[in-house]
Length: 268
Image 1 (tube, rainbow, N blue to C red):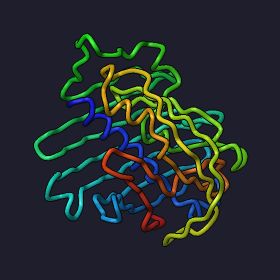
Image 2 (image 1 turned 180 degrees about the vertical axis):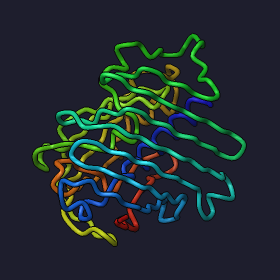
Image 3 (image 1 turned 90 degrees about the vertical axis):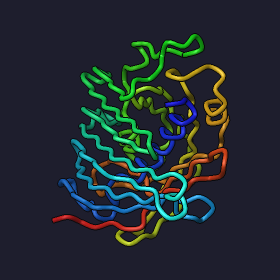
């Protein structure tokens, strides 16, 4: 898969993952809560994709799985389907994933990635088809780059003592090939109102800093590195101390992609 396509996919997964977590209002205690949630991904107000996730989260761990499909006009030009899942536990102020997988199809192109974690580091990562890493301009992923990292879905979960602490952090993310740092900075407070949740949010501006796993000089990589048009709005998940995104915007070369929750439903 070409680097620009991989990067677009990685950013899309990050955006979708930002909404792949429980609605804060529905997790009213420290007990585990199971939810079904639905989201819409849009560009210029046109819905391009819809996703559905089932999530279970508490103070100690999380288990998230979901599906995304292209919708409306986008389906005519790029029939995309993806299934993703992640599970793990929480340690201190960060998630510690155990496993992550994504099965991604765009037209006739297919990609599958699985990652296993152990002791806070990547223990194995498999891509089908394999990523071409033998090119002279390829920036290799070194062993030290894979320590203390999370997958794109786990990256959406933030543990913080107060709303003011949510955005002051850097999240190290690995998607199976590309390694990036997400630098979160405070951007104020707000509110969100969707079926199943109404309440306060804290907004973070996100800078994506590529580390390794890409070709030097790639235009898409350079664009995302310079972008200042990425933000995530977080809200607390009950009393768990975990904050989860309820909305995300990602600036791309064709416009700003918005991922927004449209429904939360508690599963008994």
